[in-house]
Length: 173
Length: 262
Image 1 (cartoon, rainbow over the protein chains, first blue to last red):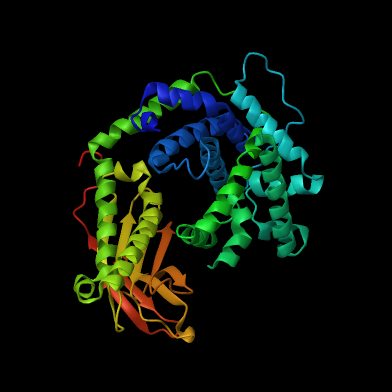
Image 2: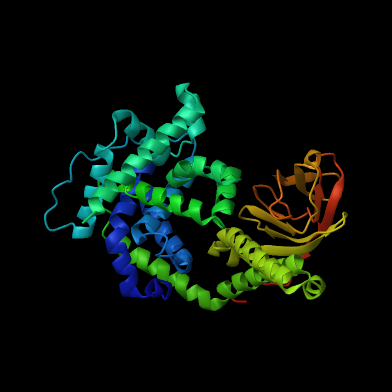
């Protein structure tokens, strides 16, 4: 983080090489254009620089922190740009073969994501997609589906707990 | 917002689907509640793997160089005073809250335990105010346009105790902000809440900053982003639910220059 704050070339490149691709992916898949994904990626790393001094490793991993920034900025933009058609989200069914391209950490991230997604029922998966990737509130989902708000909140909590447990099992030695 | 109400909303907060006041109230709660903060961190960690489930896309080859150049430009601009401008304002907020919370004379007159407790609360209030305030101080664009102005003022009580500070940030090109922080108000009767915090232009026009449903240790912070120009709204008024004015003050342009070359 010190290197990032100092504008150190190697530090910034290391961070980008680790997270540039998933951040760009969030931009492209959620916002639907390469231009928007490009802008989002730059915004994410600029925001990371501005907030670097407040990153607390005791509270969580760097990937959690950075992908939260990426997600929040993407959702903010989604909410501002009303009336724009959104791309269909494509989730992976299996880790894609990309020999010689992906580093071990990136493969582990995707493996963790697949474990998390596969632990969910179809209904839970759709719910998380709407809440996380479309930025819908529980109330908006409840109103759209005609079900009680409390039911949506309970299902969101249960789905997220499943995701959390799937990750904890993966991290257990 | 208490722990039960906060915990009910933590999955949504972690998923980024809370908005506006609800999200701010959750942030306010977890700033001091370690248990809720821990649970939120666990949910956030779980949610952070979800982006990796998206079908990967390859960024353009030159994006890396552009990201590096952008961050380095920002790092260099810190040396032109943007950081100093931000630090000055943050320091002002901290000092203002310390004075409002402790009251130098009161701190001297109280017993050591009471003053220590007040000091600890003042630190918590400061951190909360700084966290809230620094969210929009982290936007470097505000510090690069010399037309952007900051106005600061004191809010005085019309009741027995209390005091506070108000800050407005106005920009011809960006959204404007108003931030009001108050401490040491007497405990209100239930029927007196919510308090309304408004900006007034002195000609009968008012803009609502926030509605305060309950006080937190005798105080509150109110914050609002405005898409309209608030530069003419220089009076700050706090009213109770019955319309009685309980605090008032005004803001005036400060001499803090918010340009990268200040």
